[in-house]
Image 1 (cartoon, rainbow, N blue to C red):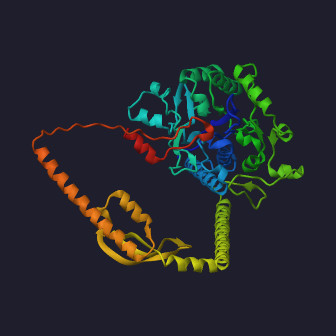
Image 2 (image 1 turned 90 degrees about the vertical axis):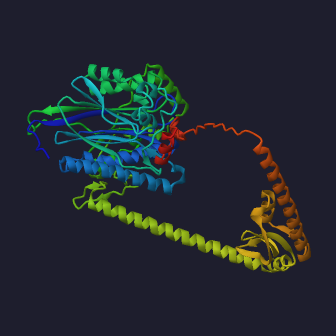
Image 3 (image 1 turned 180 degrees about the vertical axis):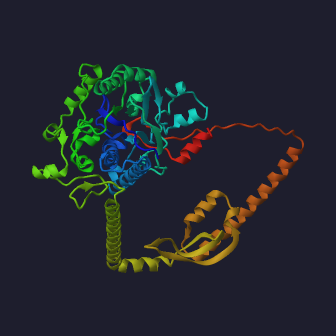
Length: 540
């Protein structure tokens, strides 16, 4: 791996996330730090998308810490491991809380390590790199329309208006699909500028518009604000989030006044900053709100928010959060929450939720084992309660049950026994798994030789008052079956004669099977297609 250069690159970044004019809540989450930038677009309903994207940001945030080894391959492995840890946490939380079932999130994250960019990506959020005046989309959408583009079935222009453009084939979450992210490593250049965004932005703005804005606006905050505002004015109906990051060259890496910024957290993850402050072990701030109050989109958003006023505690929510050590001094320490990823206190007092940390990994194993034991105990208790209830019912209804059984043995019915018509004593049912009938006579008549309606009746059981009536019904079935077979033989002979005097012709018809997919038309019902779905669509 290359040695670090003397002229080291530093990262300046910012983020803006807006709920938009249609959605009731913001399911995007973003992070903008000195070493890491990330965007996560959640899906799965009002609560699910918020939770999934927040868990993913918290799982990645530890990469921002300064105490990590500055090795490209190590950080690349950590980013992949962190994304997989987020997947496991999302799945675990969805299984514990039914209302979160089906939640998931995209992840697009970039880290600056030793003058190299490390990209982790899964889903249809995007990473654009502006270098030397040219804008390049570095990430590739894991979507159905991108698959059609790759296979040459549609053009990029056709994809913009394709009815299935919101179908996502790979994301993190409660889905039976591959959660491994794409990992890429690129050499970093001074003046590189990144844009990470949710599809609420790149889905409505042309690449040329994005490139022009990123080149013409040097200020990071102004650029991010303007891109989000343009997406809303262009008619985006989704949450809109943008992260802008610039590579800055520090000529003297030993200088006292090196570039520094407070990490910013946007969207759903910003609703609780303390857990992220504990993870990165430094103060973090909520991302600034969208400034463009005069646009039609913002006026509509303001009207929506006034119709759904927030609680006082939400309005007074702090914009800056300090790590636990500082909060402890201020007597404001609270138990941090990192979703399903446990947080542990190190020997030096620092808190960590890094899934690569051996102590955190051990805590995850302990927690999973505890959850398994709790689930096993719950199932055992349920079985005991059910057994007690059944025994109570048997005791209470014992007399009635015995009388019912005695009566059932005075009845007979004709039914199916291993493909043969047979006579049974009793009634065609069971109570608590106890059959109330047994076979007494089996005939040589095959049920497969009978019409479907007769077979259905035999499957349910043709009841009779006594065995003589049952035998009489069997004889009736045998006689009717013989007549039916003779009629079929006669029809077959007539058809053979007719066919010998007529010409043969065949016509073929084609049928087209519609490919099945799950659309991401609405965030509240946004789901992910499985690999099997993708294969089905290939055949269309």
